[in-house]
Image 1 (cartoon, rainbow, N blue to C red):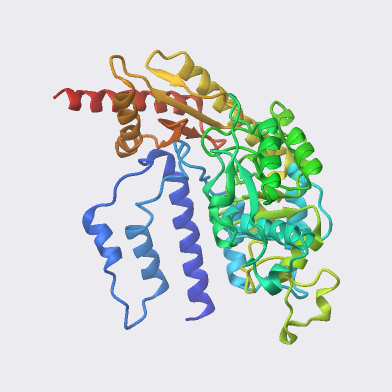
Image 2: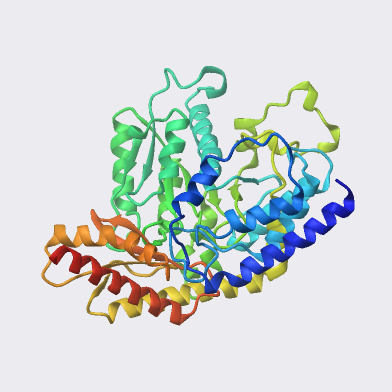
Length: 478
């Protein structure tokens, strides 16, 4: 392959991707794959001979791009998956061309990551000492990084060295979460040897926020029982309803009880940029650690999470291990990124973050986020005004939790209907919404992350929900 071969294919790829992005609003948001198309991908034989780049692009156009997840479309309201920021798409190509290992050393990707981690901290108002964070694959990995540091700090305070001796013999470390805490926290607890049995579920108030008084009482009970309380996980936007915990009172309890306060801000932490809801985030800066995802509300192409910590040395004490072949004086006082987390070979994530933030600027990002939260509040108002629908929680960020309340159905039948509704709506192809459970009941949840979404799209969402419900109910009657 010559450089001209690559240049021609790269131009063709740019046209292909540009056409794909431009055509998204006119396409079905999502559609099931044709059986033969699905099977062709599953059964693709290992090629013996290579194929030209132009032929590969033709195959991508015909076999892959017609079947998206749907999250690039402005009528996608499912999960917490954003449309890709165009600047991030372009930067991904350049980062792939460089293809470094961003573990450490004196090359552009390492220094750029230091800068964009600081940018992220500045965006959400989190204190950022030099070296106080790193990019990860997502908040799931960022949570493991942060909770490992919390675990090791608590063990050291108890006279125990987890890195040398493991956890055997140490009294159980206990963490505190709510029923809406993301599942990645439980996974992290299990992987770190803490055991999910030692995660206490603390009650929330009617607003879905962790109750500090109940939290304090639970901590004191466990401490009296000889256990070692060490961690509280608060949410800056729960996945079910987008609720934001009261960080100030929770931080007071953590300071009083000497516990590590971790905030799961995967999706919602960037909501602090909207002046109308910024008050909800008071006290966020008092957390010991914050995990969040630039690949959610910022639209950075997947994958990209971020772990931020107040005390840099807690990360280094947990992860630093520099074998002789990795000693590098050029790394400077901060050392290698691999001293702050689990990855050794690390992809060049920073360039797409840099491009996404630099393209929009703080003001542009804040405008987009404020538009999403305004659309969510408007959707909540539309739901409240509709006799067929019921709003289940206050709209605190950009997630709207609601359900269909068909007349004449008992609680079990309503749950059955709302459990089937998301898939029925998705298959219609005009909008995409997902479901969840809240207080033991089935619901629909619409997440708004795309500033290109319009009020007409919101009206269409509710029309599709009601039409799909009517079809399901008619089928039941038949």
